[in-house]
Length: 523
Image (cartoon, rainbow, N blue to C red; front, side):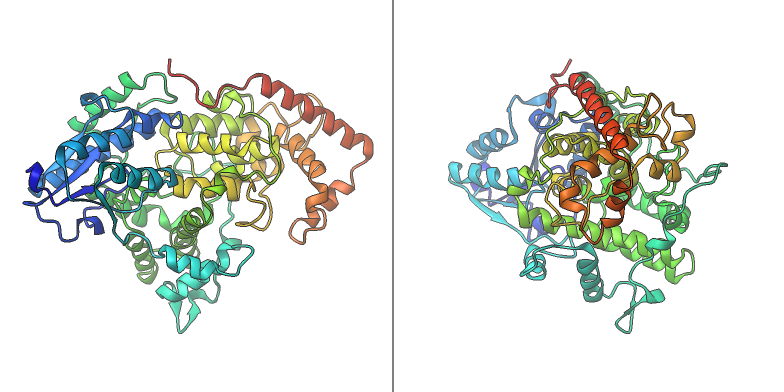
């Protein structure tokens, strides 16, 4: 077999698509698949146990699906080899298998896109990339759209792609007469809360997944989080069931409450599909088509469907285009010169701030938080504090089961932290504790008061918000999208501003003292 191997098809942990272009023309008698579990990939950032388990369990299910086709799969399980890196594992197998060619799709991480071809070149084996059918927009399309633009805005990209694909369009115009329904999608719950919520479809671990959970619990015991309640969709059939469940039970109210938060309620009306999509168990077209079909059948309103479509066809495609357009320099962006270390409580959720305690605890426990928790709680605090962008990027990449660098990095560095200086979004997403009070019930049970910026009860979000405006006034005070916020700052008396500066400085000093290394060692 080794001497006659024609193509070795390399499949990474986020490329679990049974219809992948990498398999086009696959001949079981002449070709084979290669996959590997490597501890180094879980340690590049200090990945949560849930994130590690999702990737390993899904990879093993995919291996069995390929073997059920009668295909040869050379699979390096984590507990069956000692290769220190993915590249070292590949090099060792290239030496023994001696394929004429390695076929692959482009990795979802710039680092691997450089190192894997280099590994093949060093082994004297041809490296061949196949065009990727998973996405709506390929790199050439995105570069053509981006050419000549100094700034890149989702709204313009989204309209262009919707027109091209004919999604939610009629006679060249958007259905419902509007391109987006943001104004209808900012609802929060009243004091009674979200009520009886439709629980998302759960997928209790089978025997193979239980083996993975035991392996992760032992091998990565020092990593954050845990595995209790682990129930993610991990194969194609489960992913389709999860999609059907979301469309039927949560999409109709997704739009209205997509920005709302509630203590102890991680899922609300969100889809829980991002991990399955980023593993490629689901394709964006079938997800969008299912949402549009619900609208056409009268099962979901236009504002919910358009809001969901914008996340998948719009934002997901946009951030991928931005990632490959701007890497590797994107990784080092720090336009606001943020130099504060990441607070240690990001790894423990041990904080008196109720909103952060809930969002961080949920993230570490489940490997999940919805987009407003990520952007307007976890990311917002880091930006207001002035955390070094690369550190908060690495935390996000480590925390979430859906985190692949092409989607995570632009979301964090571009949107959440404004580290790219406005290439992706026109203004920083900053707000005081009042925003969190409006969109959640966290403040009711918190010892801090969102309306206070100084004093013992001052909300750290509010203190740091005004301090952020003060520190960056020269940059944003005249900006047409931010001038009103900075106008409010100008209305504060000098003594009040000085008090805010003093309290913010003390807060930064205290949190810096409680920071921990970027890559904490495993226990």
